[in-house]
Image (cartoon, rainbow, N blue to C red; front, side, top):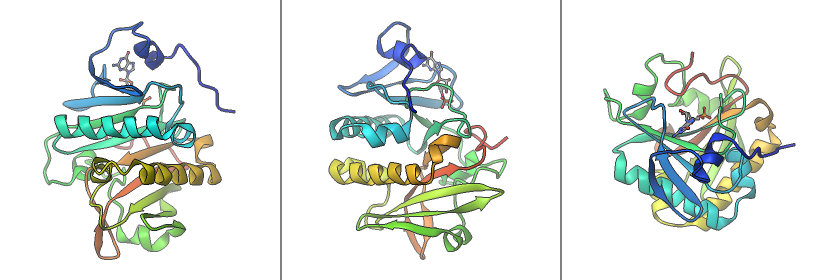
Length: 239
Ligand code: 5GP
Protein backbone atom coordinates (compact mmCIF):
# COMPACT_ATOMS: atom_id res chain seq x y z
CA UNK A 1 0.00 0.00 0.00
CA UNK A 2 2.19 2.76 1.37
CA UNK A 3 5.63 2.90 -0.19
CA UNK A 4 8.26 5.47 0.72
CA UNK A 5 10.04 6.75 -2.39
CA UNK A 6 13.71 7.49 -1.77
CA UNK A 7 15.12 10.38 -3.78
CA UNK A 8 12.41 12.88 -2.78
CA UNK A 9 13.58 16.42 -1.87
CA UNK A 10 13.70 15.83 1.90
CA UNK A 11 15.54 12.53 1.47
CA UNK A 12 18.13 14.47 -0.56
CA UNK A 13 18.31 17.17 2.14
CA UNK A 14 18.90 14.50 4.80
CA UNK A 15 21.66 12.96 2.69
CA UNK A 16 23.15 16.46 2.19
CA UNK A 17 22.79 16.06 -1.57
CA UNK A 18 21.07 19.43 -1.79
CA UNK A 19 21.76 22.53 0.26
CA UNK A 20 19.44 23.81 2.90
CA UNK A 21 19.40 26.17 5.86
CA UNK A 22 19.56 23.77 8.82
CA UNK A 23 18.55 25.13 12.22
CA UNK A 24 19.10 22.01 14.30
CA UNK A 25 20.10 18.41 13.72
CA UNK A 26 19.30 15.72 16.25
CA UNK A 27 19.69 11.95 16.25
CA UNK A 28 16.31 11.16 14.67
CA UNK A 29 15.01 14.55 13.48
CA UNK A 30 16.15 17.78 11.85
CA UNK A 31 14.75 21.31 11.54
CA UNK A 32 15.40 23.65 8.62
CA UNK A 33 13.93 26.74 6.99
CA UNK A 34 11.31 26.32 4.29
CA UNK A 35 12.69 27.37 0.91
CA UNK A 36 9.51 29.23 0.07
CA UNK A 37 8.20 30.69 3.34
CA UNK A 38 4.50 31.40 3.60
CA UNK A 39 4.96 33.61 6.67
CA UNK A 40 7.86 35.58 8.25
CA UNK A 41 8.86 32.45 10.17
CA UNK A 42 8.40 29.14 8.41
CA UNK A 43 10.35 26.13 9.67
CA UNK A 44 10.07 22.46 8.73
CA UNK A 45 10.69 19.69 11.25
CA UNK A 46 11.18 16.20 9.81
CA UNK A 47 12.21 12.77 11.05
CA UNK A 48 15.36 11.29 9.52
CA UNK A 49 13.64 7.93 9.04
CA UNK A 50 11.65 7.08 5.89
CA UNK A 51 8.04 7.92 6.76
CA UNK A 52 5.56 9.21 4.19
CA UNK A 53 3.22 11.17 6.43
CA UNK A 54 2.13 11.75 10.04
CA UNK A 55 -0.13 8.67 10.11
CA UNK A 56 2.71 6.46 8.85
CA UNK A 57 5.09 8.01 11.41
CA UNK A 58 2.86 7.77 14.48
CA UNK A 59 1.88 4.21 13.57
CA UNK A 60 5.37 2.84 12.95
CA UNK A 61 8.04 5.02 14.54
CA UNK A 62 9.81 3.92 17.72
CA UNK A 63 9.28 5.88 20.92
CA UNK A 64 12.85 7.23 20.59
CA UNK A 65 12.09 8.63 17.14
CA UNK A 66 8.77 10.15 18.27
CA UNK A 67 10.35 11.65 21.41
CA UNK A 68 13.24 13.14 19.41
CA UNK A 69 10.92 14.73 16.85
CA UNK A 70 8.56 16.18 19.49
CA UNK A 71 11.49 17.40 21.54
CA UNK A 72 12.90 19.21 18.49
CA UNK A 73 9.47 20.62 17.61
CA UNK A 74 8.96 22.00 21.13
CA UNK A 75 12.52 23.33 21.23
CA UNK A 76 12.34 25.17 17.87
CA UNK A 77 8.94 26.52 18.78
CA UNK A 78 10.22 27.88 22.10
CA UNK A 79 13.40 29.37 20.61
CA UNK A 80 11.97 30.96 17.48
CA UNK A 81 8.24 31.57 17.90
CA UNK A 82 6.04 33.43 20.36
CA UNK A 83 3.01 31.66 18.95
CA UNK A 84 2.65 29.52 15.90
CA UNK A 85 0.64 26.80 14.29
CA UNK A 86 2.09 23.36 13.65
CA UNK A 87 0.64 21.83 10.50
CA UNK A 88 1.19 18.56 8.68
CA UNK A 89 -0.31 18.01 5.25
CA UNK A 90 -1.14 14.50 4.08
CA UNK A 91 -2.20 13.20 0.70
CA UNK A 92 -4.42 14.75 -1.92
CA UNK A 93 -6.95 16.63 0.25
CA UNK A 94 -4.10 17.93 2.42
CA UNK A 95 -2.14 19.06 -0.67
CA UNK A 96 1.02 17.28 0.45
CA UNK A 97 3.79 17.97 -2.08
CA UNK A 98 6.79 16.25 -0.55
CA UNK A 99 6.16 12.63 0.38
CA UNK A 100 8.43 12.57 3.43
CA UNK A 101 6.64 13.35 6.71
CA UNK A 102 7.16 16.97 7.78
CA UNK A 103 5.62 19.43 10.20
CA UNK A 104 5.37 23.10 9.22
CA UNK A 105 5.87 25.61 12.02
CA UNK A 106 4.37 28.87 10.83
CA UNK A 107 4.37 32.15 12.74
CA UNK A 108 5.45 35.74 12.90
CA UNK A 109 2.33 37.00 11.21
CA UNK A 110 1.01 40.24 12.71
CA UNK A 111 -1.82 39.26 14.97
CA UNK A 112 -5.00 41.17 15.63
CA UNK A 113 -5.67 39.12 18.72
CA UNK A 114 -3.55 36.58 20.59
CA UNK A 115 -5.53 33.80 18.95
CA UNK A 116 -3.52 32.25 16.13
CA UNK A 117 -6.67 31.11 14.36
CA UNK A 118 -7.68 34.64 13.44
CA UNK A 119 -4.78 35.69 11.31
CA UNK A 120 -4.80 32.42 9.44
CA UNK A 121 -8.51 32.72 8.87
CA UNK A 122 -8.90 36.04 7.17
CA UNK A 123 -10.92 34.27 4.54
CA UNK A 124 -12.86 32.68 7.41
CA UNK A 125 -12.84 29.41 5.61
CA UNK A 126 -10.42 27.18 7.44
CA UNK A 127 -12.00 26.29 10.75
CA UNK A 128 -8.95 26.41 12.98
CA UNK A 129 -11.22 27.35 15.85
CA UNK A 130 -14.15 25.02 16.22
CA UNK A 131 -17.49 26.31 17.45
CA UNK A 132 -19.47 24.85 20.32
CA UNK A 133 -21.88 23.54 17.69
CA UNK A 134 -19.18 21.33 16.30
CA UNK A 135 -18.64 19.68 19.67
CA UNK A 136 -22.38 19.22 20.19
CA UNK A 137 -22.72 17.57 16.78
CA UNK A 138 -19.66 15.35 16.93
CA UNK A 139 -19.38 11.83 18.29
CA UNK A 140 -16.94 10.60 20.93
CA UNK A 141 -14.95 7.76 19.40
CA UNK A 142 -12.37 7.17 22.14
CA UNK A 143 -12.18 8.24 25.75
CA UNK A 144 -9.10 7.67 27.90
CA UNK A 145 -7.58 9.28 30.97
CA UNK A 146 -5.39 11.83 29.19
CA UNK A 147 -7.52 12.65 26.16
CA UNK A 148 -10.71 12.04 24.24
CA UNK A 149 -11.19 11.78 20.48
CA UNK A 150 -14.26 13.21 18.76
CA UNK A 151 -15.28 12.97 15.15
CA UNK A 152 -17.85 15.01 13.28
CA UNK A 153 -18.69 17.08 10.23
CA UNK A 154 -17.55 20.69 10.32
CA UNK A 155 -19.08 22.09 7.16
CA UNK A 156 -19.79 21.20 3.54
CA UNK A 157 -18.53 17.65 3.86
CA UNK A 158 -15.32 18.69 5.60
CA UNK A 159 -14.90 16.46 8.65
CA UNK A 160 -12.79 17.07 11.72
CA UNK A 161 -11.39 14.52 14.09
CA UNK A 162 -10.44 16.26 17.34
CA UNK A 163 -8.09 14.98 20.02
CA UNK A 164 -8.92 16.91 23.19
CA UNK A 165 -6.26 16.83 25.86
CA UNK A 166 -6.92 16.68 29.56
CA UNK A 167 -7.74 20.16 30.95
CA UNK A 168 -4.74 19.89 33.26
CA UNK A 169 -2.47 20.31 30.25
CA UNK A 170 -2.92 23.66 28.61
CA UNK A 171 -1.24 22.87 25.33
CA UNK A 172 0.26 19.97 23.42
CA UNK A 173 3.63 21.72 23.65
CA UNK A 174 3.36 21.99 27.46
CA UNK A 175 2.80 18.26 27.46
CA UNK A 176 5.89 17.76 25.26
CA UNK A 177 7.91 19.98 27.60
CA UNK A 178 6.97 17.63 30.46
CA UNK A 179 8.78 14.89 28.48
CA UNK A 180 6.01 12.41 29.22
CA UNK A 181 6.78 10.81 25.86
CA UNK A 182 5.44 7.37 26.66
CA UNK A 183 1.93 8.72 27.20
CA UNK A 184 2.18 11.19 24.32
CA UNK A 185 3.32 8.41 22.02
CA UNK A 186 0.39 6.23 23.09
CA UNK A 187 -2.01 9.10 22.38
CA UNK A 188 -0.51 9.72 18.92
CA UNK A 189 -0.66 5.99 18.13
CA UNK A 190 -4.33 5.89 19.13
CA UNK A 191 -4.92 8.95 16.96
CA UNK A 192 -3.20 7.28 13.99
CA UNK A 193 -5.16 4.10 14.58
CA UNK A 194 -8.46 6.03 14.46
CA UNK A 195 -7.25 7.59 11.19
CA UNK A 196 -6.90 4.01 9.93
CA UNK A 197 -10.40 3.02 11.07
CA UNK A 198 -11.88 6.08 9.36
CA UNK A 199 -9.77 5.49 6.23
CA UNK A 200 -8.55 9.08 6.38
CA UNK A 201 -5.22 8.47 4.65
CA UNK A 202 -6.79 7.36 1.37
CA UNK A 203 -8.33 10.78 0.63
CA UNK A 204 -5.82 12.94 2.47
CA UNK A 205 -5.96 15.22 5.48
CA UNK A 206 -4.33 18.01 7.45
CA UNK A 207 -3.17 17.72 11.05
CA UNK A 208 -3.26 21.06 12.84
CA UNK A 209 -1.75 21.67 16.24
CA UNK A 210 -2.73 25.31 16.64
CA UNK A 211 -1.23 27.79 19.00
CA UNK A 212 -4.46 28.58 20.74
CA UNK A 213 -7.14 26.93 22.80
CA UNK A 214 -10.61 25.71 22.02
CA UNK A 215 -13.74 25.69 24.07
CA UNK A 216 -15.30 22.50 25.21
CA UNK A 217 -17.70 21.97 28.08
CA UNK A 218 -17.09 25.55 29.28
CA UNK A 219 -13.47 24.68 29.97
CA UNK A 220 -10.52 25.70 27.88
CA UNK A 221 -8.93 22.62 26.45
CA UNK A 222 -6.27 22.23 23.86
CA UNK A 223 -6.76 19.91 20.96
CA UNK A 224 -5.16 18.46 17.86
CA UNK A 225 -7.37 18.58 14.80
CA UNK A 226 -7.42 16.45 11.70
CA UNK A 227 -9.38 17.89 8.79
CA UNK A 228 -10.38 15.34 6.17
CA UNK A 229 -12.94 14.13 3.64
CA UNK A 230 -12.71 17.28 1.49
CA UNK A 231 -9.99 19.55 0.22
CA UNK A 232 -8.63 21.79 2.99
CA UNK A 233 -7.03 24.37 0.67
CA UNK A 234 -3.72 26.10 1.27
CA UNK A 235 -2.26 26.56 4.72
CA UNK A 236 -3.17 30.22 5.14
CA UNK A 237 -6.78 30.01 4.04
CA UNK A 238 -8.98 27.72 2.09
CA UNK A 239 -9.05 28.56 -1.60
P1 5GP B 1 3.82 20.22 1.69
O1 5GP B 1 2.97 20.90 0.68
O2 5GP B 1 4.31 18.89 1.20
O3 5GP B 1 3.18 20.15 3.04
O4 5GP B 1 5.07 21.16 1.92
C1 5GP B 1 6.31 20.98 1.34
C2 5GP B 1 7.17 22.18 1.72
O5 5GP B 1 8.51 21.90 1.38
C3 5GP B 1 6.77 23.45 1.01
O6 5GP B 1 6.44 24.45 1.97
C4 5GP B 1 8.02 23.82 0.20
O7 5GP B 1 8.26 25.21 0.14
C5 5GP B 1 9.12 23.08 0.93
N1 5GP B 1 10.25 22.70 0.08
C6 5GP B 1 10.17 22.10 -1.15
N2 5GP B 1 11.41 21.90 -1.64
C7 5GP B 1 12.29 22.37 -0.73
C8 5GP B 1 13.72 22.46 -0.69
O8 5GP B 1 14.45 22.05 -1.60
N3 5GP B 1 14.27 23.01 0.43
C9 5GP B 1 13.52 23.48 1.48
N4 5GP B 1 14.16 24.00 2.53
N5 5GP B 1 12.16 23.42 1.46
C10 5GP B 1 11.56 22.88 0.37
